Length: 148
Image (tube, rainbow, N blue to C red; front, side, top):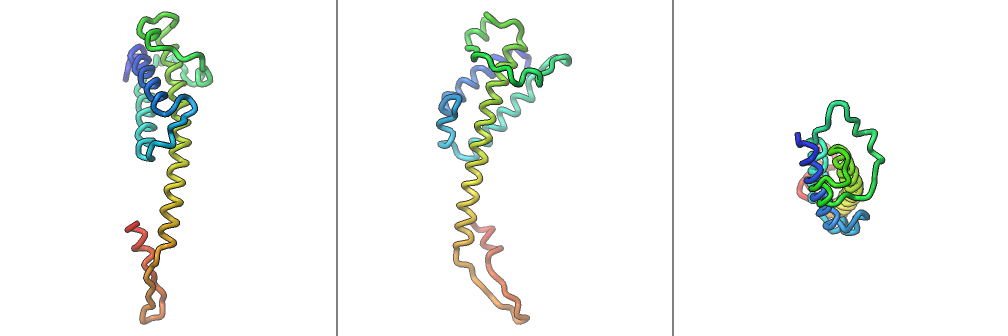
Protein backbone atom coordinates (compact mmCIF):
# COMPACT_ATOMS: atom_id res chain seq x y z
CA UNK A 1 0.00 0.00 0.00
CA UNK A 2 0.85 3.67 -0.06
CA UNK A 3 1.79 5.54 3.12
CA UNK A 4 -0.76 8.23 4.10
CA UNK A 5 1.67 11.15 3.57
CA UNK A 6 2.54 10.06 0.02
CA UNK A 7 -1.03 9.07 -0.79
CA UNK A 8 -2.30 12.49 0.33
CA UNK A 9 0.26 14.29 -1.86
CA UNK A 10 -0.36 12.07 -4.89
CA UNK A 11 -4.13 12.21 -4.42
CA UNK A 12 -4.14 15.98 -4.03
CA UNK A 13 -2.10 16.59 -7.18
CA UNK A 14 -4.07 14.06 -9.21
CA UNK A 15 -7.47 15.27 -8.01
CA UNK A 16 -6.57 18.88 -8.86
CA UNK A 17 -5.50 17.78 -12.34
CA UNK A 18 -8.62 15.64 -12.81
CA UNK A 19 -10.85 18.52 -11.69
CA UNK A 20 -9.20 20.80 -14.27
CA UNK A 21 -9.71 18.21 -17.02
CA UNK A 22 -13.34 17.41 -16.21
CA UNK A 23 -14.40 21.05 -15.83
CA UNK A 24 -14.39 21.64 -12.07
CA UNK A 25 -16.39 19.89 -9.35
CA UNK A 26 -19.52 20.00 -11.51
CA UNK A 27 -17.87 17.92 -14.24
CA UNK A 28 -18.80 20.32 -17.04
CA UNK A 29 -16.41 18.62 -19.51
CA UNK A 30 -17.22 15.00 -18.66
CA UNK A 31 -19.46 14.68 -21.69
CA UNK A 32 -16.37 15.21 -23.88
CA UNK A 33 -14.78 11.98 -22.61
CA UNK A 34 -15.37 8.65 -24.31
CA UNK A 35 -16.80 5.74 -22.29
CA UNK A 36 -13.42 3.94 -22.28
CA UNK A 37 -11.73 7.08 -20.89
CA UNK A 38 -14.37 7.38 -18.19
CA UNK A 39 -13.93 3.70 -17.31
CA UNK A 40 -10.15 4.09 -17.03
CA UNK A 41 -10.62 7.09 -14.74
CA UNK A 42 -13.04 5.14 -12.54
CA UNK A 43 -10.63 2.22 -12.36
CA UNK A 44 -7.72 4.47 -11.39
CA UNK A 45 -9.69 6.13 -8.58
CA UNK A 46 -10.85 2.77 -7.22
CA UNK A 47 -7.33 1.33 -7.41
CA UNK A 48 -5.86 4.40 -5.70
CA UNK A 49 -8.41 4.23 -2.90
CA UNK A 50 -7.75 0.54 -2.33
CA UNK A 51 -3.97 1.09 -2.30
CA UNK A 52 -4.07 3.64 0.53
CA UNK A 53 -2.82 2.35 3.86
CA UNK A 54 -4.74 3.21 6.99
CA UNK A 55 -3.90 2.07 10.50
CA UNK A 56 -6.02 -0.86 11.63
CA UNK A 57 -7.87 1.35 14.13
CA UNK A 58 -8.73 4.07 11.55
CA UNK A 59 -12.34 4.03 10.36
CA UNK A 60 -12.51 5.71 6.94
CA UNK A 61 -16.28 5.19 6.77
CA UNK A 62 -16.78 7.60 9.68
CA UNK A 63 -15.23 10.35 7.53
CA UNK A 64 -17.29 9.84 4.37
CA UNK A 65 -19.26 13.09 4.78
CA UNK A 66 -16.22 15.09 5.91
CA UNK A 67 -15.79 17.66 3.14
CA UNK A 68 -13.85 20.75 4.24
CA UNK A 69 -12.12 23.20 1.91
CA UNK A 70 -9.77 21.49 -0.51
CA UNK A 71 -6.20 21.38 0.78
CA UNK A 72 -3.60 22.78 -1.59
CA UNK A 73 -0.52 20.85 -2.63
CA UNK A 74 1.59 23.38 -0.71
CA UNK A 75 -0.31 22.68 2.51
CA UNK A 76 0.08 18.94 1.99
CA UNK A 77 3.80 19.31 1.19
CA UNK A 78 4.56 21.45 4.24
CA UNK A 79 2.03 19.86 6.58
CA UNK A 80 0.89 23.33 7.64
CA UNK A 81 -2.64 23.26 9.05
CA UNK A 82 -2.87 19.47 8.95
CA UNK A 83 -3.06 17.65 12.26
CA UNK A 84 -2.45 14.15 11.03
CA UNK A 85 -1.63 12.46 7.69
CA UNK A 86 -4.88 10.50 7.82
CA UNK A 87 -6.81 13.79 8.01
CA UNK A 88 -5.33 15.03 4.75
CA UNK A 89 -5.74 11.65 3.10
CA UNK A 90 -9.37 11.50 4.22
CA UNK A 91 -10.01 14.90 2.63
CA UNK A 92 -8.32 13.86 -0.61
CA UNK A 93 -10.25 10.59 -0.75
CA UNK A 94 -13.54 12.44 -0.13
CA UNK A 95 -12.77 14.76 -3.06
CA UNK A 96 -11.79 11.84 -5.28
CA UNK A 97 -14.95 9.96 -4.33
CA UNK A 98 -17.07 12.98 -5.28
CA UNK A 99 -15.29 12.99 -8.65
CA UNK A 100 -15.83 9.21 -8.86
CA UNK A 101 -19.59 9.70 -8.44
CA UNK A 102 -19.69 12.30 -11.25
CA UNK A 103 -17.60 10.12 -13.58
CA UNK A 104 -19.68 7.03 -12.81
CA UNK A 105 -22.91 8.89 -13.58
CA UNK A 106 -21.49 10.16 -16.89
CA UNK A 107 -20.20 6.68 -17.75
CA UNK A 108 -23.66 5.19 -17.19
CA UNK A 109 -25.27 7.90 -19.32
CA UNK A 110 -22.69 7.50 -22.10
CA UNK A 111 -22.97 3.73 -22.24
CA UNK A 112 -26.76 3.90 -22.18
CA UNK A 113 -26.74 6.38 -25.07
CA UNK A 114 -24.18 4.33 -27.00
CA UNK A 115 -26.18 1.12 -26.43
CA UNK A 116 -29.43 2.75 -27.56
CA UNK A 117 -27.80 3.97 -30.79
CA UNK A 118 -26.26 0.55 -31.40
CA UNK A 119 -29.57 -1.25 -30.85
CA UNK A 120 -31.47 1.21 -33.07
CA UNK A 121 -28.97 0.64 -35.87
CA UNK A 122 -29.18 -3.11 -35.40
CA UNK A 123 -32.97 -3.31 -35.49
CA UNK A 124 -33.33 -0.82 -38.34
CA UNK A 125 -30.86 -2.71 -40.54
CA UNK A 126 -32.12 -4.88 -43.38
CA UNK A 127 -31.84 -8.50 -42.20
CA UNK A 128 -32.08 -11.47 -44.51
CA UNK A 129 -35.02 -13.78 -43.95
CA UNK A 130 -35.25 -17.48 -44.84
CA UNK A 131 -37.74 -20.26 -44.60
CA UNK A 132 -36.31 -23.73 -44.06
CA UNK A 133 -37.67 -26.90 -45.76
CA UNK A 134 -39.43 -27.65 -42.47
CA UNK A 135 -41.23 -24.30 -42.65
CA UNK A 136 -39.28 -22.55 -39.85
CA UNK A 137 -38.57 -18.87 -40.34
CA UNK A 138 -34.97 -17.72 -39.86
CA UNK A 139 -33.42 -14.27 -39.85
CA UNK A 140 -29.86 -12.98 -39.98
CA UNK A 141 -30.44 -10.91 -36.82
CA UNK A 142 -28.26 -13.14 -34.57
CA UNK A 143 -25.37 -13.02 -37.04
CA UNK A 144 -25.88 -9.31 -37.63
CA UNK A 145 -25.71 -8.76 -33.89
CA UNK A 146 -22.07 -9.89 -33.92
CA UNK A 147 -21.13 -7.66 -36.85
CA UNK A 148 -22.51 -4.34 -35.53
